[in-house]
Length: 111
Length: 230
Image (cartoon, rainbow over all chains, first blue to last red; front, side, top):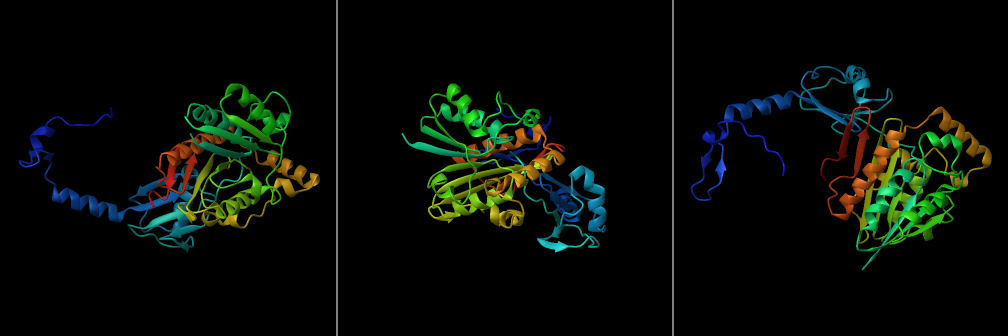
């Protein structure tokens, strides 16, 4: 059985649908908007298995991201960079909501 | 009872590790299973740091002899040959499940192109660099592509710059062996790719393929299907 996380007092916040009997929690509009706003400022960076959303790289160029994530993301120095599926150079400035992918070629070895 | 026809191309770093759990899993299935292992290479002393063997014999034959004893229910065959344009057509046929565990893009292209000619086939192809690698799952059903082929996904497979070991001279093979010494492989990465190939087979068998390839990186401990969903 999977382990579900439930905070103390969660039951009190929940309402019960009188028709179906299922419980639900009323959405908090303000936090929903804040989450949406924050996600728009984030840049998704991908290289092979490595993928992460960063909220502090909008405004930086591709070259500096490549340099700062080279070790952590195992990015080859000559890997092509794509933003929104189109190849960009290292001086391309990233904006929030963009998707930066360093092209990971297929592994060669194995025998 | 149906017969599952499995073709394993390459019994070295990845194939050698993948075959034992795959055979164990299939040995307890209700279907009749045939596994054919292809490899033209021989084990050498320098392989010992990554591979298990007790004699410097042909990799396919040596591996199959061990597996036959452990899994008598499976019908094993070994082919001590590399796949080339001369033997690819009889080797890969309709309804085959192909596990490709080779070390060159030229063979990957050859097998990918052959699978593209078939109506129903599953190809699971693994490859690695030192600490990372990927597994491509290419499925064709009723004459159409369910997922993209290795040649569609990777331009370096579509236009390989390396050579198929079955088509090169002894001098060129020696050069490849020297290259292998310069660019070594890591046992743990071979093992991770072998495991990921088994996972992909399980996903195929249970209609849970929602990806075209899986990337993994043992240095950063990450694994990611790509695309996330199609």
